[in-house]
Length: 400
Ligand SMILES: [Zn+2]
Image (cartoon, rainbow, N blue to C red; front, side, top):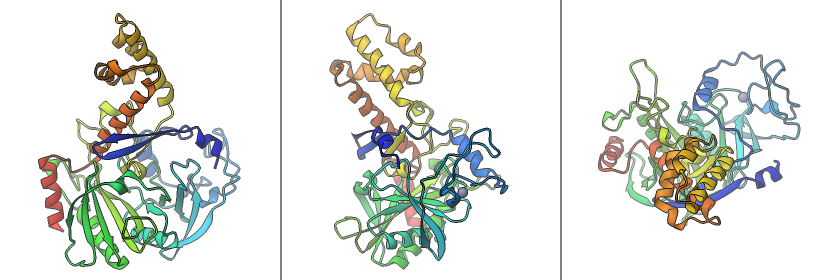
């Protein structure tokens, strides 16, 4: 890990309807376009590239190669050391993330270069992981484009010692999963549609979680835009699962198994070509990437471009405050760094110009970015927090 680079990352938290959301601008990770991720996930591994991807265990000690080299650019990993672990009887690798989004951010990767999948096997691996490391959470990205993470082509998980905002979300109601008396289900007050299961009994928790995932994969409710399969046979529903072990007070490392199942659907429409349950176009100036595992849990990983962009927006807002004749709209539109933020920045100015000073301007912008992140998570929720959404969620739970 390059701790000096990580220390430069910018972090804050913003109070929202969903509790305090956590925001980081990660200066070391490039922003990816969701369409490129989908293409990479669909690409066949011809076996010609070595290592086949950035998560393969063959990266350990790899010297790297340039863009001009056969197979294209691949970063050097000479100082990477992977710890062998066993999950579900298979050989996996364990390493800490070079990006360190949070405390002890770690990655577990299959020793085999194979696609992401969310099913009984992956849940078993997740449960084995928390039995090996009871003080860590572990989660998997979803296994479909748009709602998955940035790498679909290599089976892997992310974990660590952090407690995420989602883990502090209030419990709105409880439910039971028929046939699993030892499992307590809860609906969480969270922008994404998250069902939490708890049990002392690992086997029952696994069976109940699998049942919910299988039911969700077939669940269509057009009244809220959820479509399990389109006429072309393509599947759209999946789950982002997170597993922890907690004690009776909810502290990590106890004897109670906990599963968070975030219900996802990657359906697209003409109105939302990048995804109905994906950040909507009006928020792409802040976040256009997939809402992956870490963000599902309430920690935003935002792109480095926001540092110069927010800095430039700040200058224009302060100029407008200092001079009533300043053409704020024109200045934002005319500045390459600010154009994408223009409508949002004008709205912030209209609401908050009175309190704006040189000292607090960046904090105000950060707070407003946090508010946008809350909206983006709400976009990703399949069952909204209106009457129709709540009723639709109840229909799904009742179907179990
Ligand atoms: Zn790989």
